Length: 352
Image 1 (tube, one colour):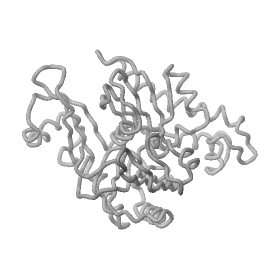
Image 2 (cartoon, rainbow, N blue to C red):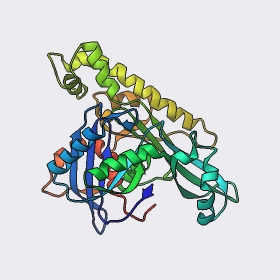
Image 3 (tube, one colour):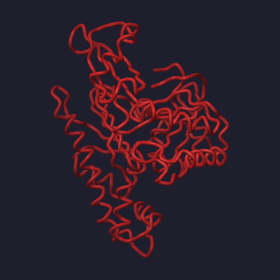
């Protein structure tokens, strides 16, 4: 949500706790073409509890990513997520101009932000007229300054220029808007399951109506497999993908994986139920899954069973041209991982 300074084609950089995803898109007359897709695993100790635990190691990983995928573009879009450091609220205010709102936003935000207003960066977007006459709907975003500054600093230190800082929930919305026909009759839940964080953005009438970050993700699969089956982290990652590892079959690991999945699904359904219970909102019509956790064996089927919803995997390259020099099958195989990065790469300086 924060625009710093400009470029044309930007590098979308999603720094997750399990991996770094980099995407660059070229503007076409109609749509986009994929120029670059790079994914690099990240040691789980580097990002911890929504913040950077080891800036040196993260910097080294970013340098390795830049070298491995021959990244030349400097101007970069990054995103921030985290239930304890990022606040997103849809609020209703008396109708006013953007200039007046800009002067008053800090005062309005104080009642919604649970930490000192001087400790956050604020941004907002006017959605449009509210249902009640003389009112407007506004999305308010507050990000802790120390978290924001730590990400901006480490990105700058490796020679990149962070020109926009977004949040994961809105990157998902941007990705969806470009790749899918937004149906005003539907409530669509976008759910991105990362390693340690799950981001939910529910779109109503094609616009974000509810967002939530939960501190649960696919690391729970890894930890449970390691504990219950006494396997290494590497073996647990293979078992999560339905492969045999350390002499343990995928069938034997299935019950352990499903028990961990139940915990994530329970957290997701709690958020969906909260949204559906809101008066005059209506129920969820469709759910789209992204992130590495969504690719865990049996996860999509489990969430279908528990919610009764139509569930599909996000394909952030659905309307993106894949050039011949890129491996289309590989791009397809990792597509759900890149949902946030694609949404970031679609940003252009000056948009809102």
